[in-house]
Length: 85
Image (cartoon, rainbow, N blue to C red):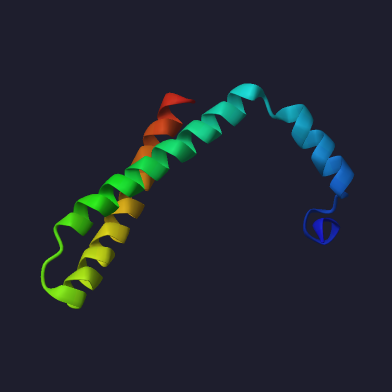
């Protein structure tokens, strides 16, 4: 499958990836994922605790939380990109 998409074998892809990646890249990636997870949790909890109106209110709050979370992740990802240029 990898050969069909990129024209390379799995072994060469793996060896090149290991040679290119550094510990700094891995730490930054894990740090960003933890940060994004906390942002999503905090936004979801914020909107979840403000629910009123039964099931309809839950649906509206869920939609607002998802939209706000996606927007926040995009903004924070852009900020991280500027910081780690």
